[in-house]
Length: 472
Ligand code: GLN
Image 1 (cartoon, rainbow, N blue to C red):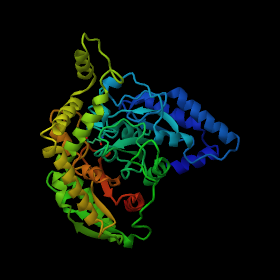
Image 2: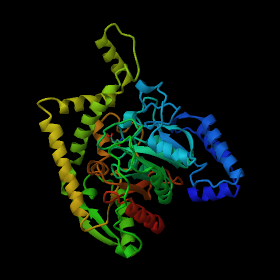
Image 3: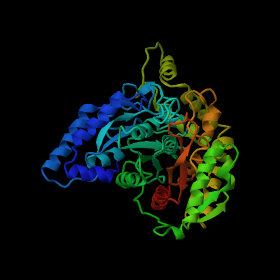
Image 4: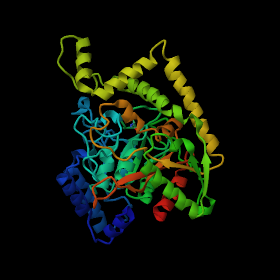
């Protein structure tokens, strides 16, 4: 059900906030997909009770009041555990609250718990969680995508009405695509990262998951805006390039997003939507984003470099697991050696190397220069189109274990999503149909359609996304 409908039912007393929260909590208790790392039944029910009391008092309640939600375990909810799915933070409890969570709390949203993820956001399948993987609710033998896989799975399995995730290179859009729901990665600087565990600070952005574009828009409008605690945030001023009549919509289809490695069934689902858009009157234009081929290399240099710096704080002194040791050096080695997982260590080593004297110019600096070229590709494209369209992922949800032994195969899943983070742009993944890979009689595997727009033009994404929901 859409948030608006639930809200109507709440104020008409057809359902209570307590009933809503209990239904979600019961589903979470029975689930086998492991979407949650921690659940706080008591505080969720207390919040719901307060909303019911406000309704009984005939107070005006916000549209989000009493709506059950879940939060990626990299985002601090005061008093709840916050582990980033890492052993090093296993016993860490958030001493304060992320700004985005404060904003939801102020509207009366009900927090059910914290969702599973790849450790520190490093991964595309949620298999890099130190506490075991999440499974895809559509086919539990497959991954839900990552790194915010728990958030997407919780919404898809109707354990939560909406969820927050974090996207550094695709971590909201990929799981949204794999779980058949909607996910938004907002413009860099539009949502505060205060109280969010950092992966790569020049790329990270918080955003919502929900089952419709309308709901995602509602959450985004609640959490965005300038925050004194995050100097990269700005006062949100929409830069709308398209509104209203589909005949005025100019859609760019980049050649580079339909290249080698794209599953033909995914391509077909996306081309079907393009055909329908064209039939409905949208202007479809083939465009070029010539530097796309460098995006993955650039991303993995910048991501690992920034991660290596950000993760230096998990030394067991101020934060993280502390293992008994005889000397200070041994203590560092043991704390980090035992507290951090394989992928995290791999990235710290790669990033430390890329930033080290003698290699900095050849790797980090060079990557920053190519990043500029990628950004310019988009700027040029947006001179003639309102929105860019392609697949969110080149593949359908894969089986658990399938890509775990080959980090490069896992990195390739992000090929279409990372350019957006490098350029600081907003992007939306919306369901684009499904592919038959399951035994007859079962639902197909979902395909996600990726829409990209100019900075601060989320509105065009929502308009286009809504059109796609309708024509499907
Ligand atoms: N899969 C990408 C990575 O491993 C994206 C991660 C993210 O967006 N947090 O870096």
